[in-house]
Amino acid sequence: MFKKAILAFAVLCGAWTGHTLYDVLERSFPEFSLIFRQGLIPGGSGVFILLGGLTFGMIGALVSDKFDGRVQSMIASFSRMPMNDLAAGMAGLLAGLLITLLLSPGLSWLGQGGHLLQVGITMLGGYVGLRIGLEKKEELASLWMSGRWSQAVEPEGRRIEEHKILDTSVIIDGRIADICKTGFIEGTIVIPEFVLEELQHIADSSDLLKRNRGRRGLDILNKIQKELDVKVLIYEGDFEEISEVDSKLVKLAKVLQGKVVTNDFNLNKVCELQGVSVLNINDLANAVKPVVLPGEEILVQIIKDGKEHGQGVAYLDDGTMIVVEGGREYIGTMMEVLVTSVLQTSAGRMIFAKPKLLEKAQ
View 1: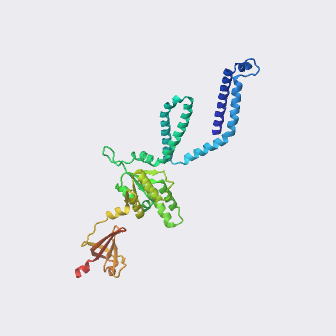
View 2: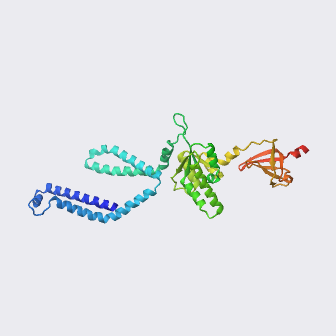
View 3: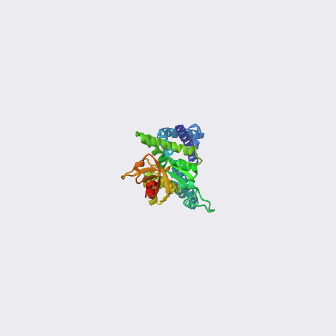
């Protein structure tokens, strides 16, 4: 179809060229028109139109294959380009063309040379605008998606919705769905496409454990998107110059002025170093655990022995480990213990206690 369009355009251009050439010859050489009027060569301008159309048609037929291949390749390249990149490039192109249009009246005093210069400036301005648009695609994406460049609050004081960007570990963890369900996370949940790709790779792993974790992550995303009353955005852009997924998340958080939601300790530290806000699910879980103070009494079940001699280990309902001194002989029984100290570590909270019976005996 495109080849036929090229061929038809070439024939029309040739016909117009032949007609124009006949007019020029007729005006420049009056004796030229007498040849046709006297019937020495029949047809008049129709001959030039026909010859022009045939000539350009043959040229069009020769170049149509090559030109069609180039155009199809260009279309395919644009089709593969992410929508954010394409929109940013078009915005830059239009801005460049608009600027050159505003400059064009100032070149009219140059006459014919001004017209040629205007064409060159227009092409240069469009190209420069296109390149700037592609280079600034992240900033433009931030403007389109959040309605701001970097402000966190609107002039009226109404807070703008923040973007919460999920990383792979927090999706696989699964607790993010329950947190979203409670309404504690506000704003738009952003799921980057490169995170989805990583999840897909994990779900396709030959390792059974990894495969199950990846599939659970995909199920969690499906639940968040379809069952929960939260706004979900699939971010289609990518940072091809960055290979690591964690680095891409940090970059995306800077672009959107959003927060990274994770339970990855290393990613948490990287975000802090680069000034990116982070919401750590593990920190949240530790923060909502019941507060236990030294001297309080707790009813627990000793389930196993501890690392040190005579120790027993119990757990609270939230998973907090309780190390009971002298509790090894009570394994399998429910008993009251007295809290002696509480240790808060990066891995969570650990409680040390001793049986209340021993306290009474003393």
